[in-house]
Image (cartoon, rainbow, N blue to C red; front, side, top):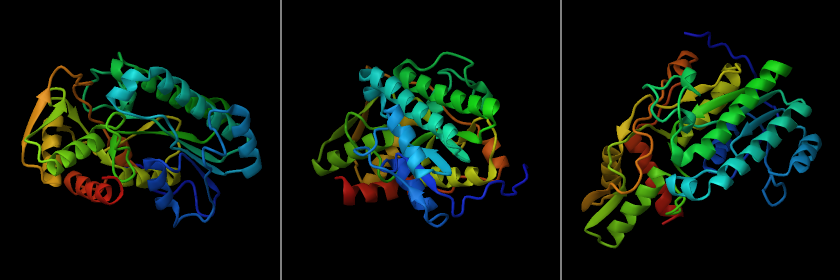
Length: 316
């Protein structure tokens, strides 16, 4: 077990959350409210994070001491397959601008959020941090993954060349309040919640799920990630990335059945094997995070239920 002594104090630090309106940004904002009364954020209409000089000026004017990069262009298989330029170009611009501005203005600590999709498609399981760049990526999200890998390596390079305290967390598949429930742009949890909810309301006899249902995935509630971000800010300080997940995977078929049960849909579930499955298995080895004293807390079924309750009130 790694020593659990706090190595960085975030209390009363000015903390900039880039992407504060997104699912991860909002959860992180809520988690940090008790730690700092100097939370900084800016609307995209005021500051376009893709504009290098405007980002640098904002940093010089506002002088954040801590930066969390939760801003990113994200989406599921459909979005990644149809808008590859958006995913690689926008993400590279956003993260490069923020990381560079953080270095120039002397930010004390930065957290960059990668993704478990950066690992090879046929990676050995469970996936250790060392497996990064050891094989071919999943083609359906390659542009996004390449951008995220570049961000991780940029943080690592700034840490090694300039001794910057820039860390990278690699979260697994996320779900929770404030997720994107758009039918074409959402990830698996939000997409299935919407599909089963609409099937229940419209009394459909069957629901079609993309793929064979055989791929296995790991799902982490966004509140657990927010806690991990705050925890690693205080207890982790290495240029090497660290996995954040549950360490437990489930087949898409099993996951769909959980969602149907939570929603209260009792019709038939069928699978469209003409649609892509994506990576066959993706489960993170979270032993490194556990060794630092962090662990996930939210059970999958209860997390899906609370997410559905939130969606009923705010989306559907």
